[in-house]
Image (cartoon, rainbow, N blue to C red; front, side, top):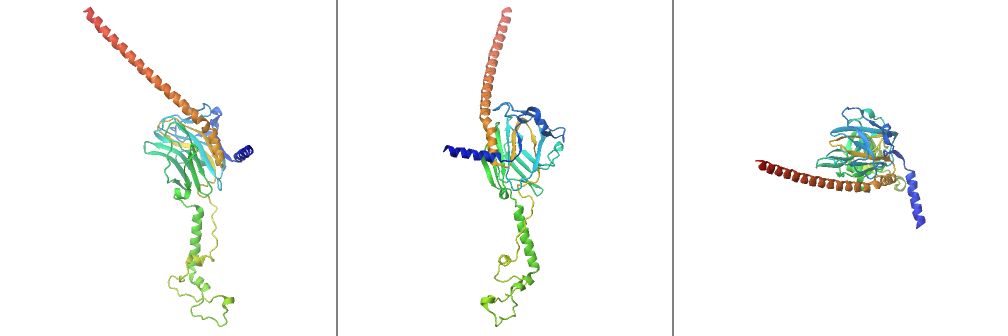
Length: 381
């Protein structure tokens, strides 16, 4: 049993070691994050970021992340990395977000960009490949966006995915697989999954090209229909030759009558085409959830009340590595974070009670002084 556990652990560690990590950011090196992240200067009114662990946290250093600092502002900041293509590979996008200000209206999502992103000029019109994460506004909009760029258009997931709305840190994970399946996790738990084709109402390039190839082949057949039928059927006026040998020459076929449509009676088009059509050749384009030149990740959003903290960014090709990274970061600090918040809440209640009692005492003191002053004035009269 012990050897089996060791072997299983070794296999898990080997798999993690073989994972490709395209981008990983935890903000553990002080102010050096400014060398990696570029604040957009497209608009002088863009809000500013700072690195902070917030008012409450599980670990003061490990929970530091990019925090929005100004109310009612747009924000735009990004970090670049070595470009890559996820064609034929799994793509995992993961990060944590904490709305400690109790978000009323604003975004908590991230965007994945192509490598040619103009970081200094990044804005709401900058092309992106993927937009993923929570968006909250009022009581009606509390959802997780999953938007994919395909054939020069943005497409949203048709399934509603509800996001977390409390003030604690939450782990968001998006998995896009080569078989065109996807999965969305919150705090390590799967909350939505399925087919990208079905849940986005899209058709993969492979199916589109296959349909197009079949259509072109049939059109070609339609154009030469009379000649094709002549090749496969004997002339109607011909009679069976006297030396025809059915065993050697096969069954004698008389050409069936056909009219305007030139369709052979009793023979299905698809059956007739089966031997004539050549296999469809598929285009070597990038299909659904496949992106050619991924090279940047960023935050481009609006917030009414600031204070959101983004941390533990990860882009990889390995689901197991993402799970382990989530446990080593958010998993280690989520408990202590809630404990610190609870302690602070008790302290705030205690402080409020003491302030109320102090106001009550001062009120009594002022009333007593007022009554004493009136009595003293009456004595003088």
